[in-house]
Length: 413
Image (cartoon, rainbow, N blue to C red; front, side, top):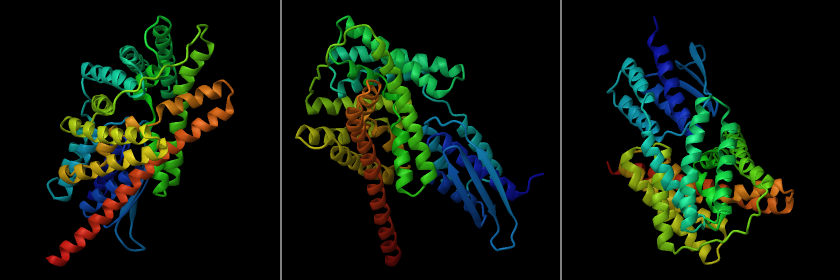
């Protein structure tokens, strides 16, 4: 029979496991485990989390006190913001004394079994992603239709490969190879004007935006092991994405004409960002009640980026400005909804993720054009870094404001 402290340990580890597998940042996982343990009356808790595992020790205070340790390996991460939201609500209920340890374990099982949006809804999401991210990447309306078809086909292909339990990177490589093949077929049949816009728009759902942003945030927070691990994951995904598309384009016998970019007006780009982000929010399984809010947050950030770059500004600085707006609006939404800011930030930053930059970098590498690869790759890396740095700056300022506000409130009381 388990004693209460062992049950608390199991509960804390289970909370960390669900959050980590759902895409939460390492520091947030460690904080959640600590909150759960202390809410259950355990005075000593130490948690160390990495993207592949959680180490938790709990017990009583004192040098001679007995303590228990639990190590849990986490093999797969699949972004699921509905579960992150549910776990946050669960922790609040636990801290308020509304759940016992046994009830908490049962509630976590329920949360972990929550399903995603239905397949028809996810296909509609891929339609939105395929059309509007292609348009946001300077494709024309024919390119948008091509992107729609490619996005749906590659998503179904990726799901089929996942069911075979094949390595994730192989699945991405094959799916992006197919995306390039279908896009090239459309292009050579005379449909569309920008092959890069179609390919990058249709494979947006595969982009490692969350991995590279969370990796940079972990590095800036001092979590070196987690940061390096996530950045390495992002690099491998980028290699799989651009390698799958690039190899096909390299060996294709057809003559590829230069891309013709289409400049859309800023109001249209604002609308494209709203609709595209709705699709991406469905893919990462955001709670349904936040779909419109997140889409508007993304659109304001994207609008600021496009306006800055349109007037001759640097894309790196534009990314920083756009992400600052996204992070600031997310902090406001957090105060209103009592949710974690990550819930709004993750889907909202996808329009700013330098997908074309990563794609072009790999194409230049495949063509042995090292100078161009270094130049474009460095810009893409700096853009990703500016996204992470902007999130860190705004979240830090928000914490400072909250601490000052709490102190003033206590003094007035």
